[in-house]
Image (cartoon, rainbow, N blue to C red; front, top):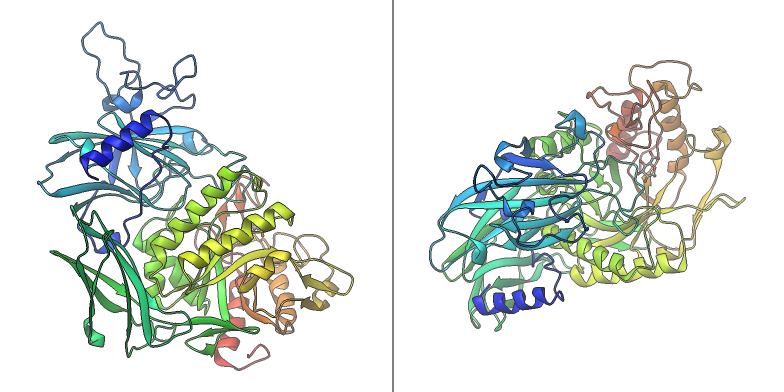
Length: 607
Ligand code: GCU
């Protein structure tokens, strides 16, 4: 950012009219020159936000007792009641709950501090990139507020160039995971409120003008025309940009406008990406001295009547829901290894599809899904009881949706953007979400829009007539027949119907079981009980004429504050097909066989 712009921004900030919100996202960090700040960070647990507010509850600005200053006692008589250098540490990336027993239930502020040396060459710019911080982050460099970000599951970056010192720098972050009724998600959710710097933190050095973002995918409804755009950052007038796909014999040079934006469109003879052929092309984007590579798959996804079409062919989505918890250790997943194992478990179930619930997962998941040929439902955490009539909540939703789509809009595996999960029907809710679907389509016209709705239960059967359905391409619906409410098996004989001629994904069904607990199939929490629910679901699913996918709840047991039942739950939601220690339950094999029949076209469930 040029010094004059910074002056303007500083003035506006001083006037309080700019909230220092996150800047436009830098995408494809995996293929950029970056410096990782992973490792041990000094931390101060600050439940009363002493490092941010005075005793009169006013924000401390530019005074040494503000923790952002990372100050030291000037002499032996000086009073300073914090010291990062003698404070404890936490590993970054990683949630704090699983790193310290005392932080297991902690909801509040933790201050993080990392010192780093940096020598920025003239004509270069430096950015700090965060994979995610849950939930609200304030970022400071050398005592100056660089910016704030709200939302716990999407990436953001801030330019550090004009705050940087030659030599040692102090990066301080205030991370606050307190739940709020005006947050997204709101105060109630069925997953652990893991706080902190839960994903990677990178320094990204770029030239004054660099390739910040681009959309390079097959045009909507096409299987041979690639369309999209390239956006430079810091452009100084119009300039040429070249897109190459060497293996497809493509070289296209276009001229940007004054703002560094250029649209692209060209035909290509491609091997289309699919679960059976997860073909990724090396794509090279160059502008001036810069060359940026990416690995991009090209495929078409559409709906036609009740069908979902992948590359023009009807497909059935054999899915499973996944929460972002590591399969290897307690806490948030954030490594390539975590992603590989979770997706390999899904493949073992004969899945070609995963629903990444209930928030955008880390980018290793969508990169790995691209490589493994697994289709993805990606969603923002507009979950249950959101404050629908609050304009700030709507702009937060737009921001989180934009960050999710911006990061993954070139990932072939992602075919569905979901805007909500089990939100009670009301006029404000439907308008809020309908408007959001329009924003999603404007950001990315190539993918399908969905949401996990709730069914209605008239005497005729089970209906999906939620007004939000009119704005979706694909209907999602969660149902817990056999678990919540009556366990009468006759409920599975019900007929499903809808007023929409659209594909349906049963986006959740299932039951809980403690792995290793065995009893008769009517005894709650036994593996046999869970298995019986799965066995009873399948004939019903086979009878739904507009069903085009299922993603049962859920791959692995996961932590939830809403599940305190001693012995059977112990703060775990036990609907996993795999236990929290990686043991498969009986129902795992029932689903695995169901999907084998669908995939092979043999057996009662062949499609
Ligand atoms: C809901 C919700 C999940 C929750 C599940 C359950 O459908 O979408 O987030 O964990 O039910 O009750 O286990």
